[in-house]
Length: 505
Ligand code: ATP
Image 1 (cartoon, rainbow, N blue to C red):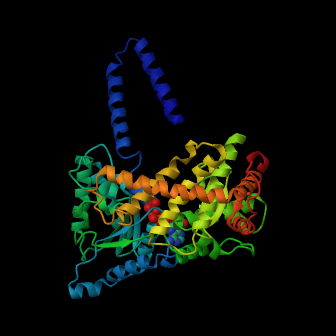
Image 2 (cartoon, protein in one colour; image 1 turned 45 degrees about the vertical axis):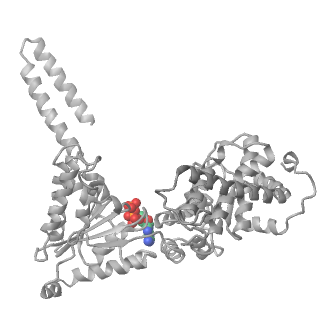
Image 3 (cartoon, rainbow, N blue to C red; image 1 turned 180 degrees about the horizontal axis):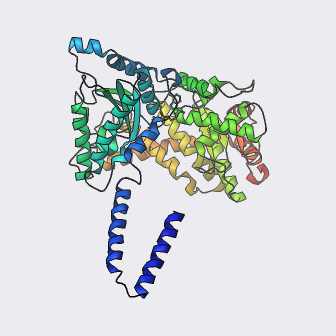
């Protein structure tokens, strides 16, 4: 950039000099402007670098084997089975089997879809080229299509250079370029890019010198153009879900292989504690825990580092922002209310209660569960509503009013109540969500929420002393672990005095 500035300065100076000498410099200025416009347009069309260079960058990673991917056993097996076809091309030809052209990995972010694609390349001894759907999206008609052609060309070239007979092309976020055509959000450029991808896929043949397998990832199969999903294109769909408890344990084991762990670290406990975490979250937990050990100048990572790392990954970094004392009291009583109802409705469910402000929340209760749950009963969902409402009701009992801090709790409670109604578990019985009158939905929902609200209020009143004790502890320590909380609940003092928050503090 510096050189460019200097050159522009010298050129400007020369032009000025010749203009003062009486020369006509206008044609030269015009010529320079044309050249600059041409360079600028080309740079912006191709992002300043060739697409081949972009794709190549992605390939330079270490080899990934299926064993380096924790959990995802179903996905790995399905993928491996599909890849066996590619490995044995000879037999495929003999039996006249149409080669598999595309595999679609479908699942939430960070669950290992890219890793699976890389492992697929390693398993089949193929070259690997990766790109993201958004790299094909341009304002200029034809650019995306050209990039698709370049990507396929690049894959073939790389395979030939590495003396391989196959290549895996991985396209992440395929929904960006493969959305349904002819919709309001689609346009000529999008449609052309997708058409080109379809053309390239149709052109793939088992007799090519380099056989290409396209692996694409998305978490929005519903918006993909049906042409992509029809047989002969992405005819294998592999579901890549969030890992279950055993999967989480395997992922934690993989990412702590190279890390010294203290004797008090139990990976099984951490796996149980991290329901809903993706592989990427878990990798981040192990990394953050190691960074915390480094900051503490320790040679080993302890369980308390893991505990703090889970909170950080889930809720963000602790903030220096300190709420006023009155706000802190409110936050503490609010969280104590959530935690109490959580423990009473689902014993063992509180993992920690926190009132240290983090980037996502001022305070929060982290919940856990002994086993992963896939089916929700009516009692379970009602329990969830009770936990959601308990924060605001605890505030109301002790301050005489609620605050805006409960907005997201109420939204969750409303969502849960809709889940009950639409699931045919309410007094309305089985209903059609599309045909139920809004007013009836509203009345049923508010009645249900009111009934649970009353129950929660009574429960919190019964445990006023306990709430006061917990609030006091939270204001002192900022965080209480689930075990400490359960211990205190087991030794709960009977309610013997009028709750006085000021005394409690
Ligand atoms: P996205 O859809 O956001 O691109 P993805 O599903 O492709 O995500 P990856 O890029 O494969 O996810 O995973 C991101 C990182 O998370 C990996 O580099 C790895 O460290 C970790 N990870 C994710 N899933 C697993 C897993 N099953 N086993 C081991 N590590 C995993």
